[in-house]
Image (tube, rainbow, N blue to C red; front, side, top):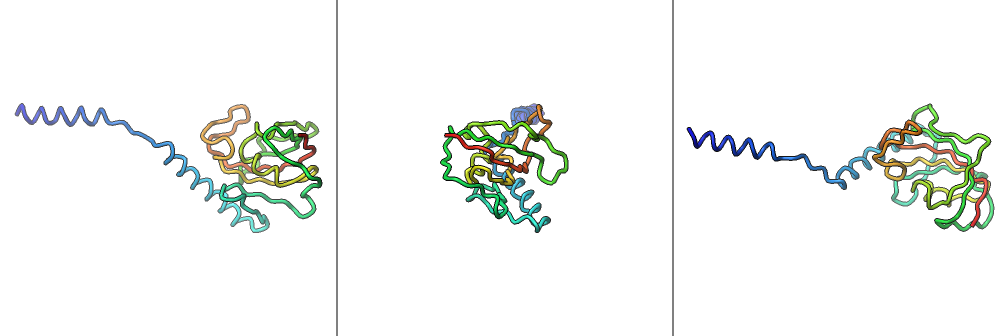
Length: 165
């Protein structure tokens, strides 16, 4: 009887010592697959949106003919970009951020990775739409200031007003 109790005690201690471990790379890959499906489902449902993928990133962009902008702008991390933009969660109608008459300037190296990849595709006075998976936006972090939940796939409409090096 004592042996049975000892074996049960060992099993009980073993089970209570077990912890659920989450490999961050597994969670990253799982979220990447979810984001990619959200974007591909959106594009399949909206055949009027002819988006192109930026390399293998999962970031998609749309530049309408005549909205590429003009100039020979060189983009680096320290390049200042002055923009107007509208941001929303992909597929949602509510706008989470919008610049109207105010056009903020940012160092390109200080914006989300999706913008760093997309903005250099246009020139001064160009317009671009970016569909940005969460891994190239704010990832697994809530953005309480703008009521943006973690792992949000974002849809940006960006007007590039000025480029300064």
